[in-house]
Amino acid sequence: MTSVNALASSLEPHIANLLGVVMGRLRMEILADSEREFPGLRISHYRLLELIPDGGARITDLAELAAMTKQGLGQHVDYLQELGFAESERLTSDRRVRLVRRTGKGDEAVAFSRAAIDRIETAWREQLGPERYEQLRATLIELSQPAGQPAR
Image (cartoon, rainbow, N blue to C red; front, side, top):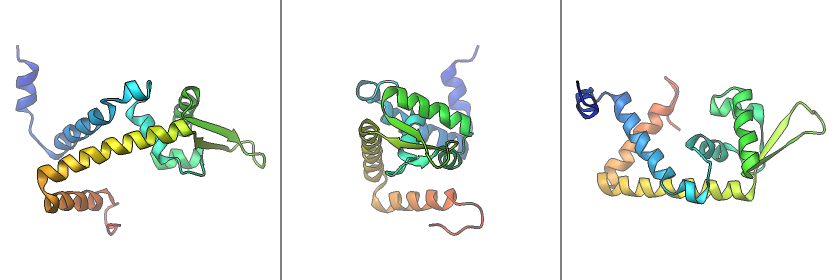
């Protein structure tokens, strides 16, 4: 019988595996103190909270931005409301439209996740050196654009 460690070390380090490992480390850093500070939040919740602009946004717009269904995003919003991180209301001009805003607690959670990401970026900048780090960042920005689109 093969051990998990032997299986893991035999995997080809192709780009998807490498990006997966790096994203796993990023998630671990964000979640390291999360349960103590913001119980019940997962990475997907932090991501959604960060996507909500200060003035709020419609569920349909957030769903498109997050590449989720309206129903799935609505469930996330309902959960965040139960925990006090977000609030929503129906527009009086069109009751079908649900506008979502972060609460003060939601703003604190966004600041928490951004601080964790800043710590990671600082560590990576120190590990790689400023030039290699900026090159990595520029490359990721370029690769995040649709094919044929110039980097922003």
